[in-house]
Image (cartoon, rainbow, N blue to C red; front, side, top):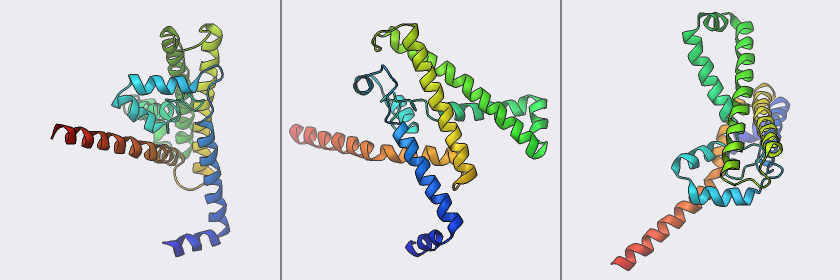
Length: 212
């Protein structure tokens, strides 16, 4: 295995692609730690830990922990994944889209452009829903039109930027960019998930010992 990796790095083109991939992953992880301006990320993290269940934990794993921290990458690639699913379903239902899909490379490029626009629309709707929903629950300081617009702009820009990074990884890196970002997000959550699992296991062990 190590010999294979060593031989891969000897090839200039593969070395360039791997280094580009590592750099993009680094950018994504940095963005996942940057909070939305005017939002207390620690407060959101505590609130999510005390009020959410497995569904939100599953969603947070897809975003690499950026959702519970309410970072600028809180939506991450989820709008793009949803958009891709919607377009694929519409391709079956709408003949015009089916023709584009069968129209070779040019048709696929047009479908990709449509997917990008749908991703943008979903990002705006989701970020607006988060901003208004959290604001009405009193989770945003100085809740008003300004902070709502600020969250919409930041979260939408973050989601579109992650989508762009995924496309750049596909073009200039190694493998499918969106799949790699998703894998990176899930792997980044593994240490904390294992730690939480260990805590729950030890607590359960202690409780069982007390009962016995």
